[in-house]
Amino acid sequence: MAEFLLERTVALPLDEAWRRVTVWPRHARAVPLTRITVTPAGPTHEGTLVVARSGIGPLSFADPMEVTVWQPPEDDSPGLCRLEKRGRVVTGWAEIEVRPGPGGRARVVWREELGVRFLPGGLDGVVQRVGRYVFGRAVNRLLRGT
Image 1 (spheres, one colour):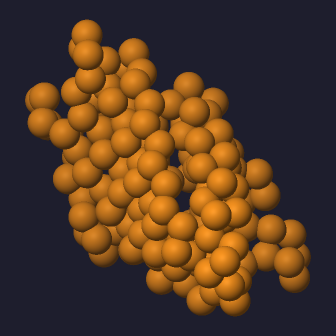
Image 2 (image 1 turned 60 degrees about the horizontal axis):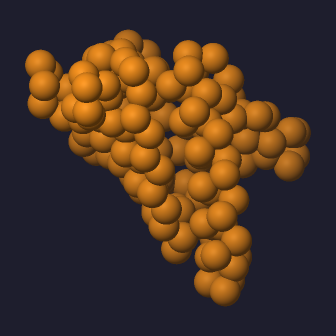
């Protein structure tokens, strides 16, 4: 399994930073060749299933993730979301934490343990570098609101 950590400090209130990184359909705009479905529709809660389908045609795969922790930020208390990856190809988990940062800014911390079945463990370093790059760009776009 490849593990990585991304941290960003942004000039946004906690609730807006949280919204930008947890409105799941926005992730499809931040990650190329990806579609997102959410079940059930409506507000996210523990048990919500988020499925990212990446690729083109027969070269695509589903990355189903179940929300196992859902604690939006309140006042100045941090928010935490944990997604457990339930797929046949992509395994692991992701945690998104939004907490107060310096000067009234928000600090976003994205932790991920990412595995790709059928890839030997010797390639974990490559998976880690690719994951940091892809998710780093996605987090930047999500926080910019694009």
